[in-house]
Length: 504
Image 1: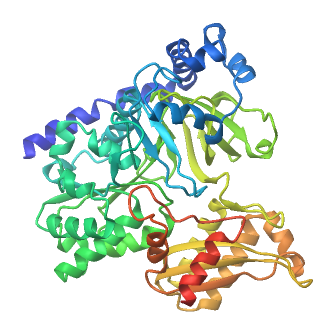
Image 2: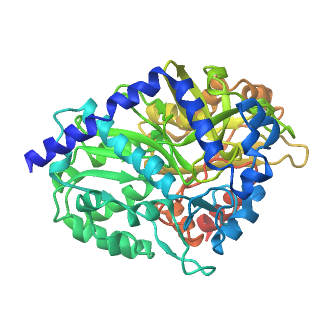
Image 3: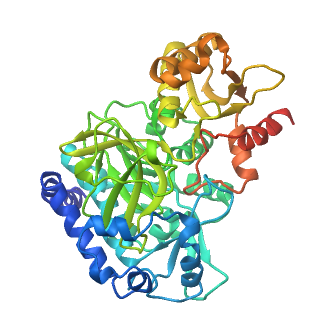
């Protein structure tokens, strides 16, 4: 097993040279991908519509093709689901990633081509391991198995030859044999659509395995870990899996979960690596062990544009090329991909922390913010303030969401928070003060609205009972897979549903 581990580590580390190449020549790589994507799709229906054959530069591309959201491409997706091909991409598209619905209750089906699977999603997964092996050459991660909590995929009702499901389930169903060999439990259990039953099965099976790594959304890994500790009577995961050394996580910010994972895995040697993988593509990896910044992956078959958030609501907003971005500014991500998404706005916002090489942080979602009173509160602000409040009061957060309280009877509005603590703050008033004060320090718009409570009063913060968010997600059919708790909303739909559960 040691020999096999050394072999896998050597193979994974060979990729580092290619990563260093796109870090050194980022603009050349992006230009090559732009030309490749345009020329590949010029004979598709979409390519003929916008005359891709005559597009020579990114500027011509931006002038000719409008920015797209899901409603703009839905007609094409519906036709592909029914079996039509060569619409937006020349190779057959048979898989569709069902969105988690965090921005809308309506399901979205994102096309996933074989090129996107092989050259983007799987390459990202392999690169995650390459970076880990490079940063920790003495690892033994391949001496054991990995636990991945997938979603569920099923044949849809439109065509016997097209399939849909969570992205995680699509990836697991199409894994190469060597990756399947290193994974536990088996495919049937991993893709069980009954999430609670699946967690029980995973727990019962994996406690007997030599698990060296975990992967997936932190929320659902915590649910699994707690069930494992209940079954075994152990106090932490290292007592169950003494060789556990690596966790590749993504889907949500890790900040609220970091302290909880330190309790579950009490080891300074445990290595955490964040990935940014969405249904639409694999975009970033945490390549440095001493920084949470993500490296923008530039050779996965994706051409990037960046929409400054101050222009986000304009009818024809300007976008920037990679060489035009600035550090510290908020940009909506616009992508063109090897699955036939063209100038597609995925709904996430990022801000660059470095431009040589291009590293960034996910700052939020274009629709996940609170701006009811002009305060422009984004997820990045919320995560930072909660982290400060937790440190000040020795608290650990399990989940949270927030939204507005509207003006009424001449009174100021407010922000209402629902927080489920894993460990309660030792002083709840101090926690609330720290949250509010930190938001005032880092967000001048919030601070201005809080001045003398003129527009925004002191925040209303509820402590939710254990498993409140789990019950809510279950009631929405959103357990497991890529499903995430929406953190901020500009209206009260999520708040009202949670308050109803809390008051039941």
